Image 1 (tube, rainbow, N blue to C red):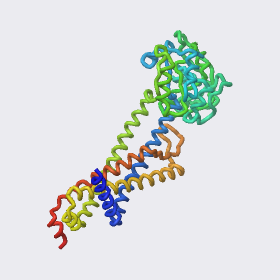
Image 2: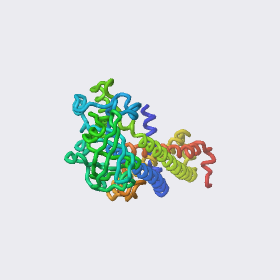
Image 3: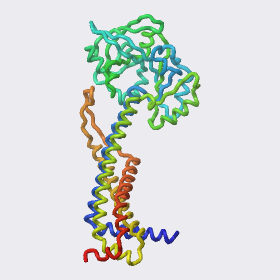
Image 4: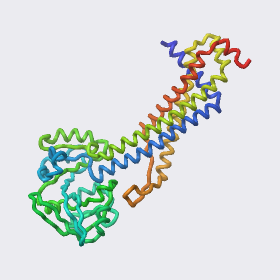
Length: 413
């Protein structure tokens, strides 16, 4: 065992010497590997930032981290939401607030109706919300004109950017809301526009309004809420908080849904981007394999006489093969470490400067992009560098180990 370990260490030392003695070729190989790793990190880091921003926007503009509803609400409640109302000011709500990581619980009452401005009338999707609790959603719920909801303004509403454009509504305009009550009658109320908002989802902005939940309850003539939105201190604590809430709440009375089960568009976007990143990584891997394979093949040709000499001195074929494999792996490790460190530093510099991005479809405001590189991404890039260089070394190592000693000694004579 000790002899085998000593032999491996000796081969590693010889491989390292062979790498550093061919400075030009080693530098070229390290540049290819490091460049591939940097490209992988920067491209993957930008997509990761896009997905992280989209995730937080989805959570803080609409879904919350966890939604609490009545059982079967998602299956049957869309058609008859008032049969699945949650109680107002219940003990269950207080229990949720006591769970670690829970920042707040805010109720929402969803309903549909008609909104009118002069002769223009359009349908809308309304969310009655708690103006105080909704302040936790301010980061990704953008009010471009006017002000947010206020508990001191019971008839002030905010309206989606697309709906406002189609209706011709401006901040300060007086509107009329018409909706069906829980018992099938009709009810209406005069309101005014406090602000115009937009989110990351254009389809929501084209039809949505938000209003104080007390006004929403008055319109549909119910008490309670259709949904409780639970906001956590960190998105990464969702699964842990979900498990604790399921222990606290009666499953016969309450159903819990984490954000990742409700964010269908986000999940499809992640799947699409993951495939794109995989294609990029495969292409980078192929470039590294072809480049390093060519580099090591040239090294084998140039060192043919040397290979014949060491084999004549008693080095076995597997020892020769192992030496060239170790050279490839060393190039992968060095290139991966240099590329990973450089990619991480570049991501910090680029993020500090910012990447100017045009407005997404359906939005008017541009934004500044960043690059998010984490430890897992660096480890994956390093693993890619090692695996690809190892694969690239197989053919040259096999060729070197299968040389005929006499022919190798005669090389270039």
